[in-house]
Image (tube, rainbow, N blue to C red; front, side):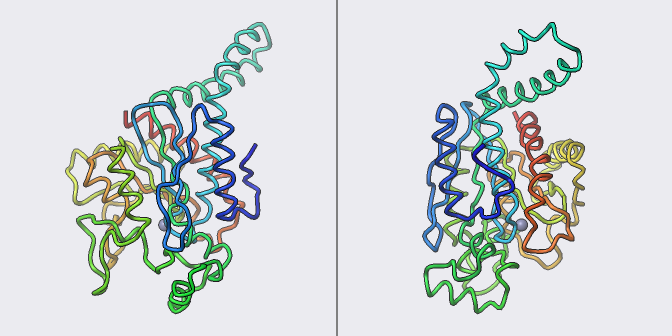
Length: 321
Ligand SMILES: [Zn+2]
């Protein structure tokens, strides 16, 4: 196993190293490409998993302090790649074991089903994983403001008076999830401009280039699913609701009410709103980790989030095709 969920030091550098290792090990089904650079000059990676002509996007690490999902998404890339690789050989093994005990068969059957689903998914889709859209912010949360190499940026970040553990923004102090040119985006200051950030542009380019059939943005605040879009049609929202309800069934995350689509007084400009409006395809924000969890998030959350998200992505794929 390359990705270890117990790894206590999953830094940006480690993230880059293991991404390349994964791409090398599973080179028949996984490609790792750099799609842009952050303001503090870190690579933003895209991991393309699958052989399908249809695309879906899974994004993590938009908010700096939400440090659980990037490593979980990396582990899911590894899991799916591994299940895919083993599927054919194990299918044969399974047939050879048909005369064995019933319990063995039942366990194996569950495993086969899971492998089979993953295999089908990766034949149908290429999943575009961007596990860490905001690497600068991630490093601030993990190791403090000293991790920002550019002196000007570092000093500006420190002037906000927000602790490194609570940091949500990129290295320019911008909330990327309020920077997308969606209909509800509102200017927050004279200098504020939609799509001003490298990270925002990178994700917009991926959307434009691949025209995905669906988009999941993974955040970490409150085991919840945001699906409603006031700027979209009833038919669109009905489809969103159906998908969200199904994902609720398998995760127990709560569905956020339409009125809670955006917090009172908050400006819009979220990743998912932009995607919905541009492509009219399903897009959900999935919030992992319970809402009382304090920052920095305890790495112990990774295991249960992994159990939830590996099913969420499979199920989402099956519902958007
Ligand atoms: Zn978030």
